[in-house]
Amino acid sequence: MTPPTHRPAAAPTGLLEKLLGVVRPEFRVDVYVPDPGDPVLGRPICSVPGCDRSGWEYGLCTAHGGRWRAQGRPELTVFVTQPGPELNGRRGLSRCTVTGCRFGTSGLCCRNCFMGPCRVIEGMPGQDRGICGATASTIVARNFARMIAAGTAAHSDHGRDQDCV
Image (cartoon, rainbow, N blue to C red; front, side, top):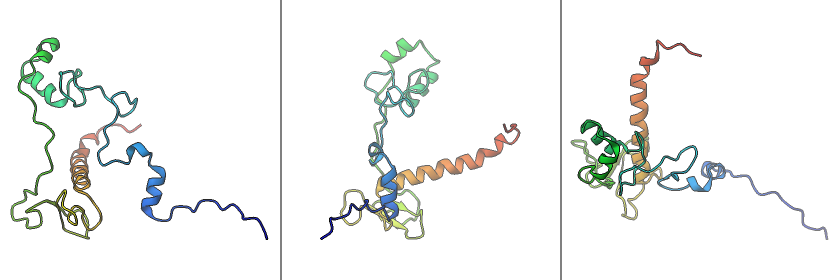
């Protein structure tokens, strides 16, 4: 009888297995929130007490930065103590607002691929994913990425006069 030979682990075959094989565990979440101390993705939290958003301009989040500018850029120490009314919180996903859209009447409407259109209702078993497996959060992220790509493409001509290095 021959001793068993050691077989190397089977290489991932499906696309999902390949993707999960190269994506670090901390990124395998529905919503990734980077640590404020992360040297690449992290940013400090907004300077306004109680605000959990990332600070951009002068240590203020986008919303508080807009208020600060609208108030005439007062001294930051004064503004931080009296930033105005509480900001709108993180809103839940809302239903499709396209007039006449029958697919989004009770959930999110997804028309990003040729498998659908799909109606996705968060928290409802059997209807919480599209045909392609996309969750409501995935659909929102895809739509946001498409808006960014469209906006970038629409304004890319502004850089035509720049010299390429």
